[in-house]
Length: 82
Image 1 (cartoon, rainbow, N blue to C red):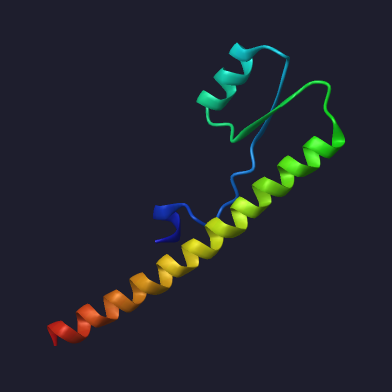
Image 2: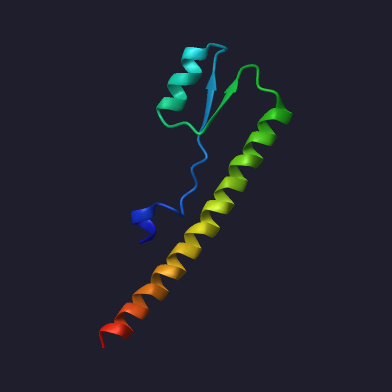
């Protein structure tokens, strides 16, 4: 189930672009989760990485809840069919 939901792998994908809206838009359309415009400013980079890591942690916690609840539901269905 982990693979089916793809809930355990981090999705930290950063895109460095030139200061053009079309480049940034294209990267996001292709699946980037964030973009950083040159020149890269360290405080902005660190804040964005922190946000992506927080999303990863929340996604992982939610995935664990889903796996646990799915297992519980499976066990209940087995008990009911017996």
